[in-house]
Image (cartoon, rainbow, N blue to C red; front, side, top):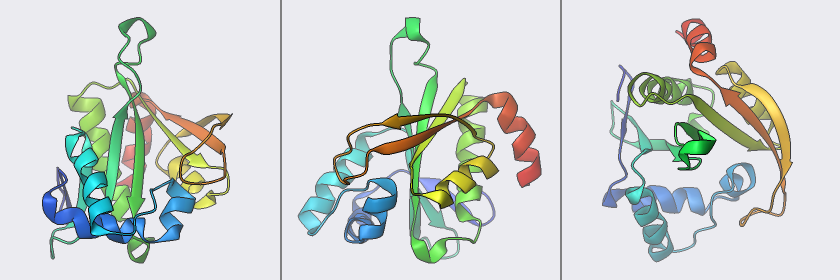
Length: 180
């Protein structure tokens, strides 16, 4: 998936330094629950997990091939009776030096078009920690609608309050046109 500015690709072995950069900055643990990583060996273990996921994508700048963030499109369940098999939950992180430049908007537009049009996903869910107002604003800008609050234990941070949002194909169609 690509546009004129960025492209999305699978994780590769060379991304170990990128993972280490994310894991060594407390900001990403506090805002997105990313694991604290202190060594290349720890980064390699996390990288191997991402490499196994079929819908995890590294966001790269076309001009430099530099990885600047990533997107996860995770399964929510496989039970056909619950209808979770055709839903996903999106997670994303962008290096802070690239915030406010439209890169995550571009990347998520590519992923959402792919998810709704090609994968035929019926719903995409997203959550953010209660104190992450930037994510709340961004999700609403992308067309997500707030649905509920949840208290959950998280492995990498003390905070346990999360807000959940929903994006449907019809809502995405309306918001996508506004974002272009």
